[in-house]
Image (tube, rainbow, N blue to C red; front, side, top):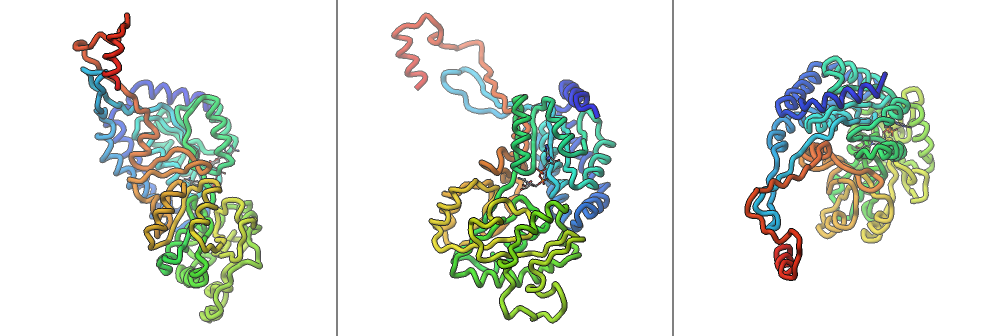
Length: 474
Ligand code: NAD
C-alpha cells in the first residue's frame, strides 16, 4: 500500500474542513456505533479465534467501554468544542480571551494485541470526535481481530477520513517515515522508544501508553476477603495479559499466610481451568516460553495443606494440582502464585504480563514505599488498607499512572478519570474529556477592542511610563 498517498489524501480531506463540523463528527460516531452493533457477533468470534477470550469478557472489558465512550462523546461534544471564555488580564483590556479546541490533522493510532478493540477504538473515537482523520494500525498478534476491523471500517468509511492498515513492525516502521500530526501508541516500552524516536524526526507529538511492573500492596489493616477476591480477579483476568494487572504482590508479614489461603480459595471458586470459557490462553509461543521460564518450580505456592485433596476430583479442580500447570498445545498456564520471592529474582526484573503472581512480604510501609519510589514509575498501583494514614502515604508519596485503593483495575472504567502512564510507563492520557484534549490543540485567542487602549506600552518610554507599567503589570 502507498502510505504516502494515503496520508496525503487524509491531509487533503482534513484541509477541506468537513471534519470540523459538529454534525459531521456526531454522524461519524453514530455510524461507528451502528457498525460495531451490526458486527457484534463477528467481533466476539474473531477475538475467540485469536486467543480464546470469552464473550462476557469481550463485552465487559472492550465493547461496553467503546459504546459508553461513543455515547459520552455524543453528549458532551457540543459543549467541549464551543470556544471557552477565560478571564482577560488588565493589561489586555478592553478585550476578550477564548480557547479554541482545534483538531490536529492526520493521526496514527498503533494498538497492542491484548485488548485489540478497546486499545485502538477508544483513541480513535477521541481523535475523530476532536475532528481529526485517523489511521489505525492494529496488532498483528490478533490477526482475526485486525482483519475484521479492517474489513468493517474500510468498507464503511472513506479512506481519506478513517482507515485501518493491518500489519506488524514492517508496516509500522514504514508508516512512521511520514509526517503525522499525532501518534498514539499502546504497547511495550521497548517499541515505545522506537516510536518516539521515529516521531521525533518530524517533531510529531506522541502519546505513549506503555507498561511496567504495577504493584498491589496489602496492609495489615486491609479487609483480606475483599483484597483476595479483587486481586485474584484483577490479576488473572485475560490470563494476566492486562497492562494494569497487579504485576506482583506485597503483603504485610502478619497477614501474608491468611491472604494466600483466601486467594487460593478464590482461584478455585473462579474456576480458572484449562478450556474454561473465561480464562484465555497465552497469546503465542514466544510469550508462553518467556512466562514458563519465569516459573521457579521450587517457589510455586502449592496451597495450604487442608485444601489439598479437599475437592476429591481429579486434576485441576484442586488448587495444589492446578497451580503451576501448563499445557504446551493449548498455550495454557494456570494461575500461579510464587512465594519466598526476592527482589533479585528473574520474575521481578521485567513486566510479567501473564498469570504468574510473585508474592513478597513487608513489615514497614514507609520503608516499602521508599523502595518503590526508587524504582521506575509503574502504570498502575493498588493499595488494600483501611487506615487513612496509609492511604494518604500511598497517594501522596508514590507516583504511578493511576490506581485504586481497595480495588484493582476499576479506575480504568471511570470515563471521568484520565488513563495513562507516567515516567517509563508512558506519557499523555485519554478517556473522556482527556482523550478529546489529547487530540486537540488548545488555541489561545485574544480578541482586542479597537478603542480604550492606554498608550504607555508604546515607545518612546519614560520614567513616568515605567512607574505606571509597574503598577499595571504587578
Ligand atoms: P508491542 O510493543 O510488542 O506491540 C505494540 C504495537 O507495536 C503493535 O501494533 C506492533 O505491531 C507494533 N510493533 C511491534 N514491534 C515493532 C517494531 N519493531 N517497530 C514498530 N512497530 C512495532 O506490545 P504488545 O505485545 O502488543 O503489548 C504488550 C505490551 O503493551 C505490554 O508491555 C503492556 O503493558 C503494554 N500495554 C499497555 C497498555 C496501556 O494502556 N498502557 C495497554 C495494553 C498493553
